[in-house]
Image (cartoon, rainbow, N blue to C red):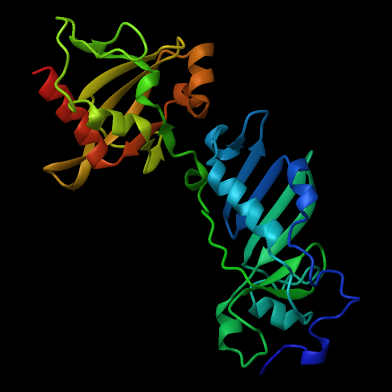
Length: 316
């Protein structure tokens, strides 16, 4: 049985939501918190002076692309036609009915906060039921309940969000340009250059062959984590230790630990930042503010292998 209003009533000038954006654009810069809720899962994003952080990860930096992308999509998506205000239909759409405990919602709930007070609430429900209905909707979308009203609307949006705190964590670990790097060293090995624009030399004053450092520079220019974890199953001994120094005085040290992979012969590698940590480091690598909190980052195997191969080739 279709639950849609008649076509002539789908867009009413008197409706408080239809045609407006899901999230008012002028509200976005005022927000300092976002809660993402679904059944027993919850993520809290808090905006600090520099960037968004994940509360459940001890204020670990949030991925700015995820947060800013969510806010942009919601502020650019208009609320569509009114669907229903009937408790049973709201429950079937996973939206729930406020004030009626027997009609429990199981949808994705978002709270947008300013100084701890919700400025906007929205619950996204099922799209499957809408797709099965013989309806007048122009395209695929999802049902949403806004604010504290028991009214469902259709919106042209396919919203898939991480429901675990780790899914919101910053994945970009390094983004350095070759000209920024003054030296990279490790126990018993190293490369350094006297000044910007000059070539790298090993401790014996010998320069690497042309192109030998290209693989390393590719790793340092765009190193991203695939997973973040506090206690992954890794070996006690590091496969490689590296210290980077930049010309602006910033320094960063990390170690690479092997962990179990799909095949025993192909381990996955986890990177751990080991310091030093100071004002210069935080200024140059602001997304690594959580490095002292004991997090490890699983990096792509091709990037780990390039680090290991370069070490073996340049310093056998």
